[in-house]
Length: 112
Figure 1 (cartoon, helix red, strand yellow):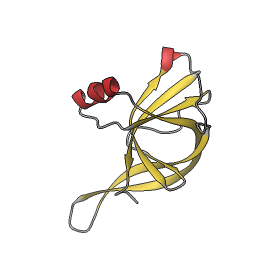
Figure 2 (figure 1 turned 90 degrees about the vertical axis):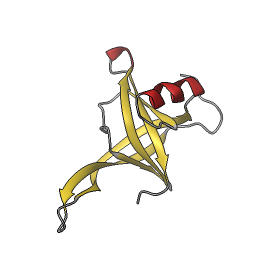
Figure 3 (figure 1 turned 45 degrees about the horizontal axis):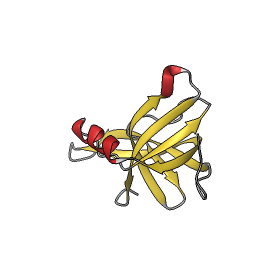
Figure 4 (figure 1 turned 60 degrees about the vertical axis):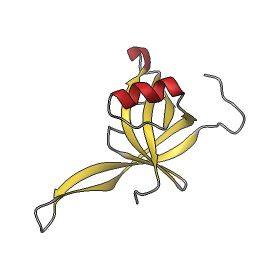
């Protein structure tokens, strides 16, 4: 993996998505902290990947690459890095060796 200047490993706080039924009978999705932290590198996705994921009904804006360790977040979970919030859309375990994991995420500003 080649890093560009200012592209260092960052710490992400993982919050899992929970669904509950409110008083009106509607399903409400909330996020709850898991205490897990993920260390990874954020990069933008190239136009080919954007089209690939758009065809699969996922709006992907970035990817986060994690080196070693177990899968810390699941699809639908929220990753927080400073003031940036990302929602996990897909996870790829590169070559199924467990060395690298790619989280395809969407950066959101409307989620708290």
